[in-house]
Image 1 (tube, rainbow, N blue to C red):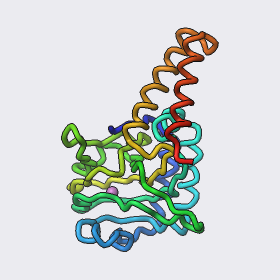
Image 2: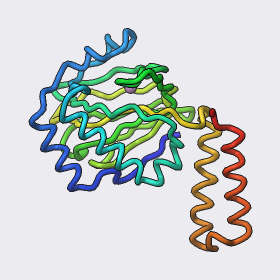
Image 3: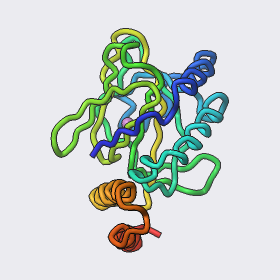
Image 4: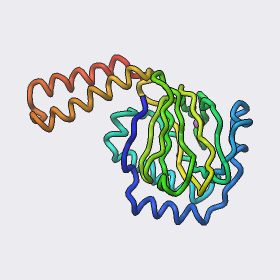
Length: 227
Ligand code: NI
């Protein structure tokens, strides 16, 4: 299931990001492609060990921590520090699946990629092509979001970015290890939580059935979470 998280960044924040990114040095993205993806990747990336990527990445992590829809959908255990890319002049990324395990920078910890995220940093009208196309059980879904919006999708999905034939496409991308490894279980918890949130508004948080459903939600997490 693809989940769109609207307005992770405000218009003002996106503008601020664009200003920093415009002055940055872009590197050939092939340098960071795994051996499988090397043949299909043609884009530019910011160095993740230098500014502005470090500060902007932290800014995104702070924004996500204050985005309840993201927490509900991802149930994050670990988040890879966001990376930034730019596609222009026919740049594209052919069909691939993201690597399964990633070493977290400056850490001994490994991150299992359960969810992949793309946060769009410029408007869809700014470029032609550049769609994120994701194979799902229900067919191929195509995503091209407003600046500041983000899509989350299972990292098990085959996906690609189609060639950008006009303008440029700027985005941040990263991975999440969820407390719930199984996609179906995580999606059930998301649906349940969204329903509880709406019932809480209608009935109040102390209503007996809201309390009971919240208990079910937490007891399912207790059953399914990878400690
Ligand atoms: Ni990918």
